[in-house]
View (cartoon, rainbow, N blue to C red):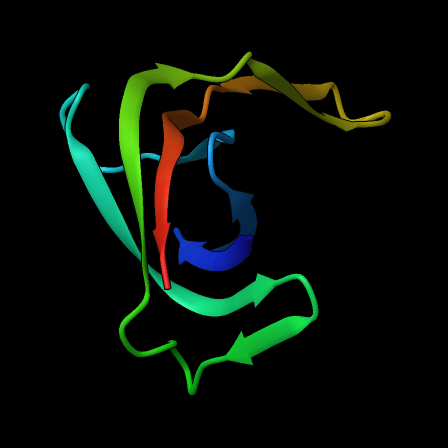
Amino acid sequence: MYAVITSGGRQYRVAEGQTLKLEKLAAEVGSTVDFEVLMIGNDDKITVGKPFVKGCKVAASVIGQGRHDKVHIMKFRRRKHHQKQMGHRQSFTEVKIVKIEA
């Protein structure tokens, strides 16, 4: 069984026991987070919501909070004696899918 959930403006295809990194959520480590389901699939049977499937939810446990590796940004203008360097580290929340309720 799998489900398609939405979090942080993105859609994810998840199954029980799967671990994934989402956009940062305001949740403590060890707490449980519920997601609304856009679509649920079980073998040949697929149910699509309008926009969400009624009576279905995905429960996930928060494993940890963290930040990705640094991405270096370099802006450079040729022949103008101008260059600018920046860096960015995106925050994430790591969750483990505990249960898919259909």
